[in-house]
Amino acid sequence: MELDCRQSPIPCQHIFSDSHICKLGGGTKSAESASRRKKGNASLIIMKMRTYQSAGFTLVEMMIIVGIIGTLTTIAASGTIRARNKAAVNTCINNLTQIARAKTVWSFETRNGGSAVPDAADLFKTNGFLKATPVCPMRGEYSINAVDTNPTCTYPDHELEK
Image 1 (cartoon, one colour):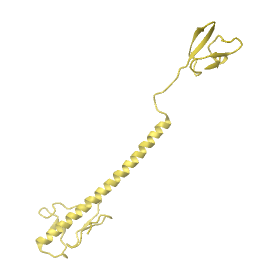
Image 2 (cartoon, rainbow, N blue to C red):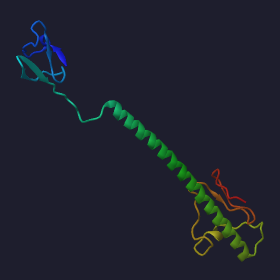
Image 3 (cartoon, helix red, strand yellow):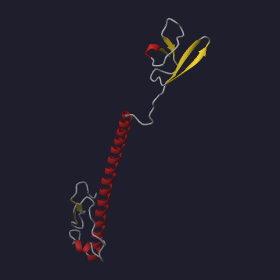
Image 4 (cartoon, rainbow, N blue to C red):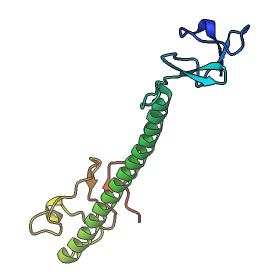
């Protein structure tokens, strides 16, 4: 690399007498240290460039990383919400199935027909067909209905198939 020696704070001896161009090793950012080397009759000034490199990340790199993490979080959160809703629907349908089976057993034991409607106390009690009253995970309310009709939930999409 070549540099006009008149811009350098370090005195130099010129390689060519009518020129002000000196040969430099490194760059032009810092003239902190210089050494002279003899090459024949001419002296070369070799300037060592001090480079300042930080070990951190740039702002753009950090913003890209934050964007990637945000995208992955969004994908994971939406998948978790969908899985939780699907699990709630499955739990509610399983509860409705248990209520329907308890109604069937109740009708056989009490010898009531298909149009009879059991009370909640008949199905859900300590000595009943179900030990605890089922609760919809989405806070829907269960309707027991008649024996020949499936139980229902007030929450949408929580239906027992016929």
